[in-house]
Image 1 (cartoon, one colour):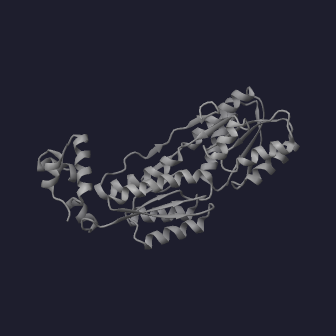
Image 2 (cartoon, helix red, strand yellow; image 1 turned 90 degrees about the vertical axis):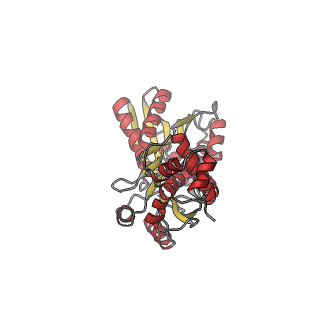
Image 3 (cartoon, helix red, strand yellow; image 1 turned 120 degrees about the vertical axis):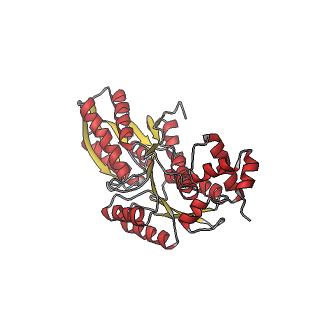
Length: 343
């Protein structure tokens, strides 16, 4: 049986009026006291009257949050999935169920199908890595505006939507960071090859844009020889590097903005280079960690994939269970620069 305001007051050591103000946003309450009251309410299964009226639900009813990812087989997404799984375990005790849908690629049709499935399953909030697509954008606006379903994007964002918040890396800024690192290593001159994953992936595009903008503005003597797509496949990364260096042997910098990093070493081994180009990659996966340790690459930019998977479900749960609005639009994870010396 669900608890009462009196029980919460006794357990928190405060008055019934303080409990009522905290749970129904009716006045000022010390933030630490309010957090304690909410924790006790969650623990004993009490749902404020305002939430019951708005949702039409009774205490103890399960709330459903949809979660949609892309590139499910990549090493980076495994960190994201771990964050989602840990959030799922913790939120279960608060009466929240996470409904996960994953896609191996960056596919508009698959994502729209996943959204439809989650709608049919009764989701009340959505955490999504959106595909950059007009149809996806329209669908997200329909959910947010017409159906009052709060949306948090993570890892990738999508402009022109009524989503509440984005959780993830400031990808354009990370691209500028990479340009600065490359300039330090090349002494601001030479030819640079950029390898992206999918041109349709906004994360990749923003990283490339930030890199190119900074290079052209601050380091004009560095020359871009091309931006090529690998579809996050190591075989493609190997092929791109091999072919590019046959055409431009003087390439002295390579920037890989997404997956397929294992192809870097294979390309270097194949060409038997006396001196390899400087290399910057992303994401602290087992493959990229080994590449740093073995001096195949010089810098790695990590974006805390675990936090990107873990945080959005809690923001949505607080919105659904407590009525806490998501006020901060951008919740950036740290741009963490790694070398073999600070692993």
